[in-house]
Length: 506
RNA sequence: GGCCCGUUCGUCUAGCGGUUAGGACGCCAGAUUUUCAUUCUGGUAGCAGGGGUUCGAUUCCCCUACGGGCUACCA
Image (cartoon, rainbow, N blue to C red; front, side, top):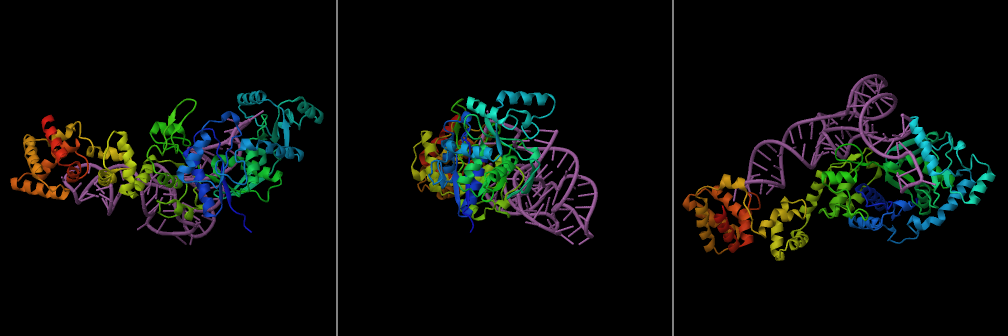
């Protein structure tokens, strides 16, 4: 019988979740849903020094905003708890001890200072220090020291760590679900610390123990973990869990839009796009990092763009709902190479989703923006404005930039347009038109336009020559929605007032 | 330096031995629009290099180059 699929997203609460992290969560979520399995959230807070207050809450809120709600985990309940590693602290030591008993791990008493010195010395000699089969015999550990001394040191309360004893000259081969067969020779690997002197496990031990205890079937994580895969596989073996251990998949990294390396917080600041799902305020420095949500992205757009960063459906489709992603997702369609993030395309996704929204829905999102500008307007008017300007918008906030003139009169007029379009007789003609507007009663765009047209024809005035300056008086620039729609929406009084004001000003 | 992963238009990608190498973003041009934007149509641009294997390589293998990751008592 096939085991039920269980995957986990296991971030460390050391700061806000990066969009790469969200993508990892998304792929895990999609894989779980696709196979009718479970998606868990585990918090890997084994490093007490790097704990950042608020980070855990941020992670949970981010997942919720994206619609990636875990079936189990911190904040979501479940039978395999606790899901916070700091709360599982007590159970890790026994596994470390078991490894020592089996000869797969050993105590090491070397201090951080001693190891630092060794590393520094090696660097001077243009080599690298590695705690491995070549050096372990010369260092202070339960392999080099006598059993008595080891017992004595422990008795005495000397600080120690527990290290994995990397076996000699073994090829560890694994078929990564994304990358295919990958092989490592253990001679190139070092003796990683499994259990720290502060009583906490390291990532490696905790991760393997928890994945086993939580019956995780598939580990889907970033490529930065690929080098530690052999260690993890060896740990499963040493603990006797080889038969049930999970399969591995390593996702490609998300790279900077330009330049070298993986996407970082700095890139967002520098190039003006968010790298975090939600706005984040650093509790230490007070620095604020923008978020996709606060920048006006719709969660469905964010999810969609993330999904396409390293995955494709194998055809030309680029727009997917969450349901479609679940339906179509497959690990073997994940790309192997790193993906440069393109902020321009991100906007394009949002534009698409914005255009899909109903006028009513957008009006409701736009209303708070208006209110924040101190503008009160009827829902009907807001909806009408949305209808007229939404096609030129990418974000809800663009509605204001594109449609503010529906609510407030222009304060100044574009110089270039004045010079190009405002002729000697323009003021006079506009004044005449004011009269026409004054007497017009059927205040509908089409009707006004018709009246205008007739008026122009009678006088043999050039339609275009007068429309441009007229637009200028109402909008302040030569851009904007259909002129007669504007006239209709702002109303007779306001239209005339704006024209008159412009005549006086220009 | 060592280990591992990767390499198709500027960018994201399709391609899984025989294709005019397809799509999308961006960019450019034209059409529509009384303006701007939208929309539509068209265009620009790519298989890193060198060896093999094969009747035939973008596709398979090797080497080189380049890119990326890891190399902590961090995850």
